[in-house]
Amino acid sequence: MVLSEDVFNENSGTVIAVTITSQPQRAGFPLTYELVGSGLPKPSWVKISQIRTLSVERIGRKIGKVRAEELDIIIEGLKEILGA
Image (cartoon, rainbow, N blue to C red):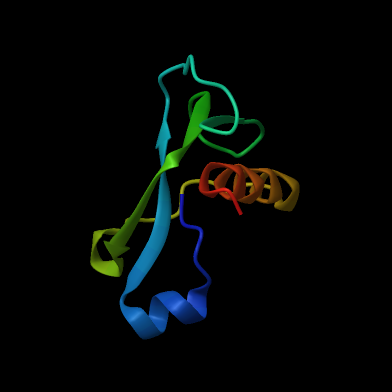
């Protein structure tokens, strides 16, 4: 799941992203967050602690979108993990 803004992605040639998995997770928030109603084909979890910087060339087509409220929760999880 891409977290960074389009202007950053376009200017840097990279995106900041977190891992999404369809495997049920034992770890709870803030390490993981279950996506609900994202349009993904399977039940999915964001692995908040697995943040990556990727080349835009490695990014495929968009397959879903999270609601603003879910994005806020994911960002709060990142802040909690980082102690911010």
